[in-house]
Image 1 (spheres, rainbow, N blue to C red):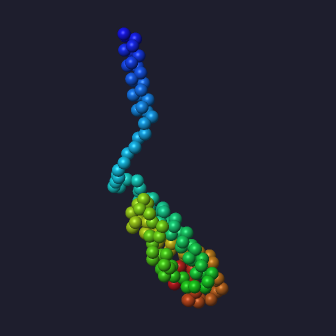
Image 2: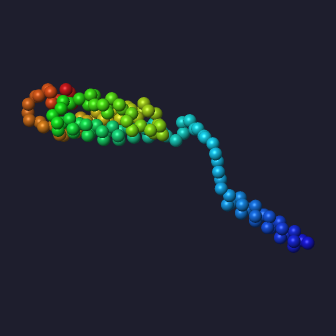
Length: 132
C-alpha cells in the first residue's frame, strides 16, 4: 500500500512538473510603458547620423552644380524629422541633432567640392569662414 501511494504521488509530481515546464507562456494584451526604452542620446545619435549623411550629399550636389551655398533652402533641412521613429526618443531632440549635423556636413562638403578659382562670385560661393 505504501509503495502504491508513493508511486502515485511521485507520478503526480512528475506529471505536474513536466506540464509546468513544457506548456507555452501566452500573454495577450497591450502594455504601455512611459519613459522606458530610450534615452535622449538615442534620438540625438540617430538624428545626427541621418542629418550628417543627407547634409553632406546636398552640399556636394550644390557645389558640383555651381549652386549657391544655402543649406537652409534645402527641403530636407526644413523637414528635419526625416527618418524619425517613435522608439528613438523625443522628436525635438532628433530634429535639433539632424539640423546641426546637416549644417555642419553641408558646409564641409560645399567647401570640399566648390570650384575655388580665386574669384569672389557671391552667387556660387561663400568665404572660407562659412559666411555668405
